[in-house]
Amino acid sequence: MSSEADAIEIQRDGASIQLAPNAGGRLMTWRVGGEKIIHWPDPLDPAAWDNAAKICGGNPLLFPFLGRHFVDGEIGKWRDHDGVVHELATHGFTRNLPFSATRDADGRHGLRMTLVDSDATRGGYPFAFCFETAYRLVDGHTLEVELTTFNPGEVALPYYTGHHFYFDLPHGQRAQSSVELPRTERRGTSCPTARSASRRPARPRYTLDDSGIVDIFHCIASRDRRSRCGSICRD
Image 1 (spheres, rainbow, N blue to C red):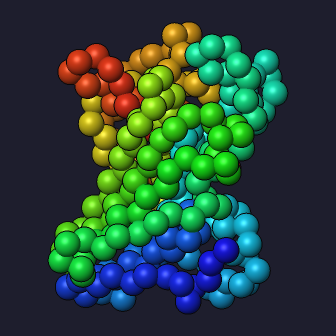
Image 2: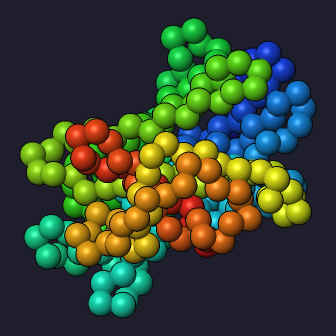
């Protein structure tokens, strides 16, 4: 599928990132001043690229859904708005699919990668889509990540996408590290858009050793009363 030789490297002000468009648009590494921010297996068996979804490192992209899904207690299935049940792996299908790639206009500090629907996606997700992710080194300490989904079809597109950073953080330092969120709602369900999903206000900050954030959807409550959902999942 890919190899480290296929990776694209971007540098800026002492920071660097490596990306693998042909292996699910994977961010492989992010270093600041030579220090690892994101974990990447080293050495990595070249055969691991044959199933890039199983590589525990970098930042895998999760689309069209993130986390586990169940229908009547059976994992790996989801039900669309018409009641049709489809089979789909945990975290979706993007991690093993090739993305096209385009460098930023300046040609140096960012990369945009795109995945569109194909025969490889329509079996478990019979919808037209265009999913883009963009990485850009803003400066020597800041990495900007943008996920965008376009719906070229004529029916509503069910999705909630995400990513899965493997931060290079020792377990003993998790209590001293935190994640900050905008105003969100906690929804403890395998389908956060379901009407039955329980909702309660979330805190603006969580330490990374807080078990209360694992396998819980955090949905950003926007002013128009719609929600955008994300979660911290445990594989």
